[in-house]
Structure formats: structure tokens, C-alpha cells
Amino acid sequence: MKETETRFTTEALVIKEMNVGESDRLVTLFTRDYGIIRAFAPGAKSIKSKKGAATSLLTYSSFTLVKKQDAYRVREASPIRIFFGAGSDIAVLALAQYFCELSGVLVSSGVADGEFLRLILNSLHFLTKEKRFPPLIKAVTELRAASISGFMPDLVACSGCGKFEDDIMYFDVAEGTLFCGDCLPAGRKAAAVDRTVLTAMRHIIYSEFQKLYAFTVPDKSARRLSDITGEYITYRTEHRFATLEFYNSIKE
Image (cartoon, rainbow, N blue to C red; front, side, top):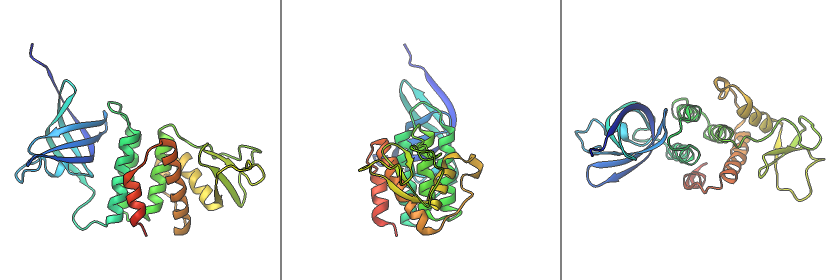
């Protein structure tokens, strides 16, 4: 009995690539319609291949894929947006690769997640084209990604007394809750956040998407925010992000 093939077209961001032999690639795609897909791209490394640029890491492309049983093959591919070229800043590139790893951990295979993909694409744009401060874009991406994926913290008010804010509040990374100084349980590990950082965290979580990137904070506050969101996403996913560790080792 002849095995049937399914052919379809979708847009996707290449979040991982691996060379196979002299001319082929195995790519991991964050697709708009089907979540995460791993696909074989024959001949993609060849100089004459039209699929070369489209199957490169951190390129957003249109793909025509062929599915046979549980295996995918790239039939055609054309780039829509190339986020990185030669000479890109290594710290920015490392952060972008971290966004890819984050996608691979939090997005399911076969399940459309357009909101998450929109977040990653916009973050890459603000990181590479708008040249926004990397720690701020990192924090936005991490905290919004956590919220989309079911790890939204409760930052409405102190979970003890309901106080909305104070000069210093405390964010419980393990529980994703907020405390004022009077209600923080003894011995509880929590990150101190001032009004600027707390306001930024609330904006990232609760704002409409079109307003998500429409704020700024001083660089010192952005770095503090980035440290907190990095700790939070790592704790909640229970995943050791190699790309995050590399970014932290080379950031300013």
C-alpha cells in the first residue's frame, strides 16, 4: 500500500539548524499554524539552493512542507525577513538565540501558538532593527512568554493585605506572588522591586499587545528587571537554558 503524503504551506521562524552531511540541513521551525516542527531540508547548504537563506537560523520564511507519516521535508522555502547578517553584535545574537530556545521549550508540537510567535518576532524586531536596550527586550519577552504559557504571576496587589504598591515590594519568584514588607513571610526568598520595576512588570503582563513595547525605564531598572524575569522563567520552566547562560556570561 502506497504511503500518502500531505503538502502544505506555512510561515515559520527557523529557531534551530543542524547541518547533515555536505549539503543538507535539519531545521526546527516555529510555525504560525502548527507550533514546532522539525523538517529535513535537502540540498539547503548548496550554493545554488534557493532554500539556503530561508532555512538559516533566525530567518522568518514561507515554507512548503511535505509530511509523510511523522516526517517533514522542506519542498520549497523563501525568506520573508532575515533578522541577522554578517557582523551582528554577539550579545544581541546570543539573546536572539535564547528567544529561540525559549520557544522550543514553551511551545508544543502540532499546536498553533500565534500569540507566542508574534511576541518572538516583535522582540527580534525591536532587538535588531529598533536597537532597543537588550535587557529590557529580554525582560519583556520572558515575562510575557511566561504569561502566555500559563505561568502568569499575580502582581495585582500584596497577596497578604491587598496593598497596591509601596516604595519597595517583594516578588516571590517561586510562587509568582507579590508581598509588601509587612506581609512578606519570614525566611521567604523574594526579590525586592521598587515602583519603577513593579510598574514595568505589571505593564508587561497586563497591557494589550499593541502597547507591550511602548514604555521605557532607566537602564539600571531594566537590568534589575531582566535579572528577576530570567530567574522567574528559569524556575517556572525547570529548564536550564544554555543560551541564557551564554548571554549572561558576555553581556555588559
